[in-house]
Length: 160
Image 1 (tube, rainbow, N blue to C red):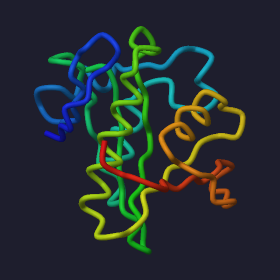
Image 2: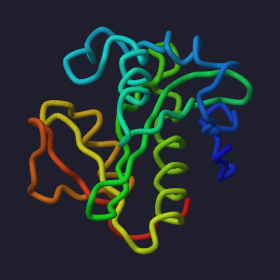
Image 3: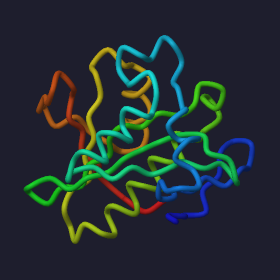
Image 4: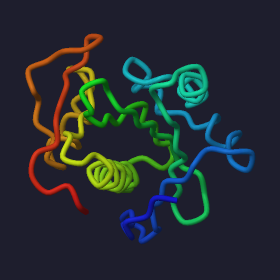
């Protein structure tokens, strides 16, 4: 479990846990709001399959207290940079600070594991909500574009 003792706005502790036999179904069923489907998969199941079929990505369940409320995955690039990808917070859970706590937790953990390598993520340029969230957390666009998404890198403090 990855736990930096962060909470959402309701005071629920947000943690990241491996996806396994006890939670994969709940993670697979995580779905974004309909208006977000232009930028993320319709179900987190797609990201679970990507993690299973790829040596790059590792899926994590996002929990608020004892309930699965989302999915996020991480990977390491050839240059040693750590990447955050495939974040989906279940539609009814959005707007409560779960995504913010999940990104802060994973970014801090990746920075600890990364031995000085940068933490990066990417988002679609039309996804204004993601841009606001990531910018507020210290991610700065690098100018690079990958798969039609803007690449951003964490600058400043990495520990929550």
